[in-house]
Image (tube, rainbow, N blue to C red; front, side):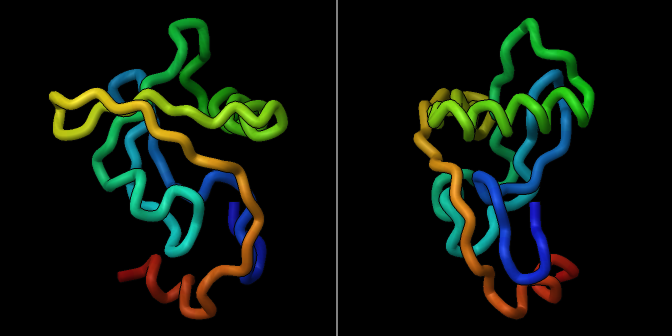
Length: 101
């Protein structure tokens, strides 16, 4: 999540789609930057509830356990395993304006 000019987390925005997480964008210079692309689907465990609260808790638990490999479907055909590390960093001071573009 973003707090003032810092973000905490893996550094990507998502929506729940097709029972998985669809990446909307990665925050510039975050751990997800240049790894996760808009439209990527992050595959979730079958046992995980598909609610905002459950997914947020799931991602927080991954960060606490230092688990960081996401199974990703890209372009509806390619399956990738990407390592993305949890972080807290100062964001670009124009971040809020970039989100609105």
